[in-house]
View 1 (tube, rainbow, N blue to C red):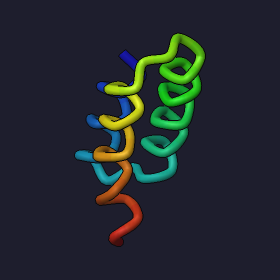
View 2: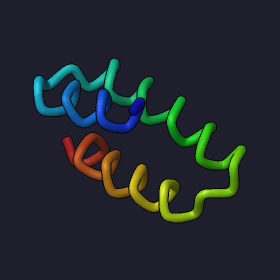
View 3: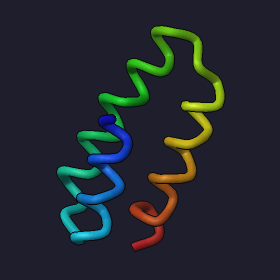
View 4: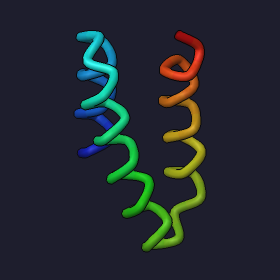
Length: 51
């Protein structure tokens, strides 16, 4: 859910909020050992770094 919120925030060009949501989602993915979730976060944050 946090990742989806980050996606919407990124679409709305609210980069700081998106990064916060992605960071929270990443922490949860790491806590449960979800490597695919971690990779999805890396994909989601790539456009943020490109700007």
